[in-house]
Image (cartoon, rainbow, N blue to C red; front, side, top):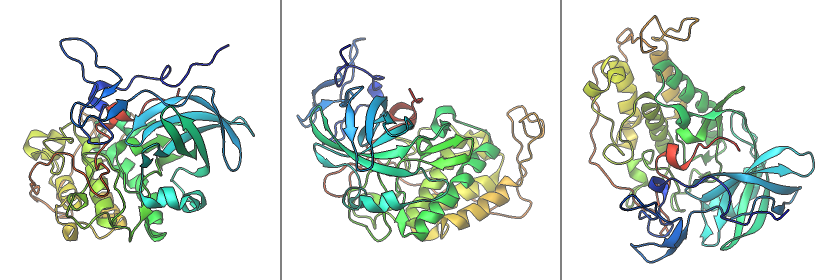
Length: 378
């Protein structure tokens, strides 16, 4: 039986998640009721684009430690397509995450030049990297990181969620992030599509943006809506403070459905219009501090963020039915008991469009995670 070639299998990329790899402009949009093309020329900069999968289902790939057969396209994110594959040695399902493609590195210098660091990481709660493979894609050579397949659902697939669940989710990510920081590393792309809830709790996914704490100059690949102001051009660059910002943004996006991609890409919505925030000023204070435009005013570490988040979490009690104290929306707020930021105002910040930082690489190349990521495992 003939195997399908690249671009002939896999889920289509939603039009709202199609962007030019060179200029970050929207491409492949439909008009007058007609669907947009999956390949063509960017109307903004003239670069060719093709959002179809670039590896064929069934393709055999050789790694350092084993061989792999591409099973199916998984999802297309900021760095291109990732895939599920089977490992020849034991038949196990793995994930192939993109490190670089024909246009060069698609992640920070650490991920591409120091892959051994990624392969040596063994951090509880962080997806494990096992191998590296090279393959010939439709447009040239690509390099992929072989990751453990972790069963479960990414948090972007079912948001918003009740406050207790949202707080538990971000608290579940803190140990892995804190361990990375102790190793002198940053995750650098924390968002709900990179947090998976499974049988073992929360797992932090996607190692393609991991970088050294002292690396302030390598290209930044992150997700719009979770990028701290100082990562934009002219800023100080990624740091532990920007990880705290991403944690706070992740919590906000899990709690409320608001335009976190454009109008509120760098600021929180007005609590008066969001019941879950309006009813709990301590929760608002936690979010406002974590996402303060000034990195110096944020929590000093993810552990400090977690300490305040646990105090807020203690005000939500869950019954055996899965709802909190009988509240029809599944939660109840108990603000003010310990005076944690009672009545704090949300710090406003001017709206910003997605920007670039370093080497012409886009900051915020992946848009709404529900569009660009978080597809179910085929």
